Length: 443
Image (tube, rainbow, N blue to C red):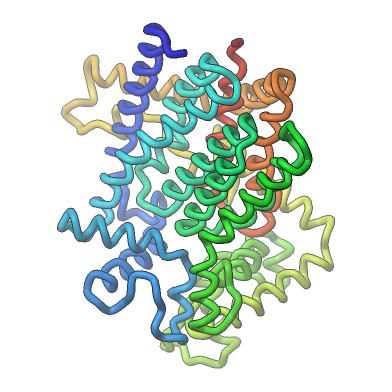
């Protein structure tokens, strides 16, 4: 129950979240055109699709031209959301999307992380998780990052929360709702697509009750996701025609992921869309000025060729590639110190110099901002030990619920690192690690 003291503690955590994220927002607004801090090229694709939707050159969902395989590269929800923000706000810029997403992400993720921890392990764990979340440089960074990663995270964590409730109440309908939420996440990012299988297995193995009930819940979670993503799969098949539930991006991630490694580069693999495109331009016998990108023309067939080439190389070096995946796993977990190469930025510690205008970089306000940044630095280094200890304590408290949460973490950590990945792709994992970090506080 929420008594007065707990409510005040939660309000304090929310205020801290607002302050730290507001400061990080100021930093990101100044760096939104800097490719070193923001995926300018990726956003340009969403921006172009959103403008085409508004100007009548592209449909909201359907693809009229079967040659436009590039339009299947990303799921349709985020370009549609960008178009809606452009339309309602009258400002066709990344800054408009950033402002809307920042507010939504702050509120939604604060509630989700706190709610999951409280539901799974009690209100004290929820409050502790809310403070870990408040000081998270990772979530503050990507809350101010206009991309599909944050909305996808909302629906994955929302589904994880409903999945917990389904397990606690043995509810088929809640299991179905969890699957539906996961399916909606796939309309923003394809990464969580196969997590529905993990959730179905978790409900089957880690819930109480008769096997028949557990089978019903497992099937419901799976069905919920399949029904929601079916329109995209059917559209792709009818338009191209081809069975492409992932939109034809797996091969590029596998191929470029090999380009992250020395051995891969020695065998002709390269990291970066620009290098991949140039490699394929030469391979296709096209002149240097010919228009081409990673997914057009004939993007689905080309991506399957990349997949075959990458998998053939991986099969020749399976032990080596297992080591590559372990390195990526560490990169996905590491939020303190220098980031592992190719994994992306894990956020900034706020400072007066980074986040305040020159005229305010002294005095009490600057001191407070620098103090927040110092605490963030400490939280970064303590985060993984706290999550590990909390995980052990959580398993002792309720191993069934803990295992249901761990399925999502392991999904992002193991199969999620089979190809090139970045830390922004695994934000749901970090949300649940934050939940386990809150478990260090006793009930």
